[in-house]
Image 1 (cartoon, rainbow, N blue to C red):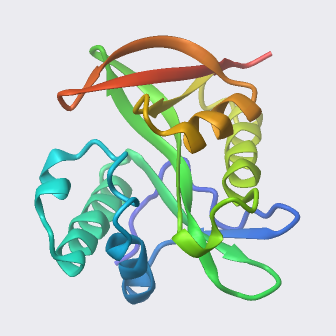
Image 2 (image 1 turned 90 degrees about the vertical axis):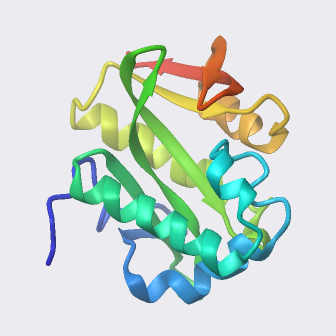
Length: 181
């Protein structure tokens, strides 16, 4: 059953990447993300962090992705390297509630083998452009724990600035923002 996936970038492309909907067939590939010790340490789902088994973590991740799709809360897209066909990560527009206000977030997570190659920034820029072109919001955020220096660099290079520091899911987070011009 295909449900409405609000804020989907399915079918969008960048120079090196193709965006598509995540499917159950991506599960085995995404386990590598969940096996890598540093992958989840900056994601502030305490429930996920308590689970040590990578397969169970991956099941939780996919449940959250599909719940977002089904409930109109945006969602991650599989990022496919056009040259190799490999899934390099996930990126998308996510509805988040920060300080009791609904906001549209650019979220991104990269497979360990594909980090440091500019894929996150390339995908995040596409999300920004797509959201503003489609008038989804007048501003976009990225919610990042202060220790996640790599993601902070992506947000800054995507034109975002630190808007505020607050708590989300019981964790201290920085909220980076960019306003539509």
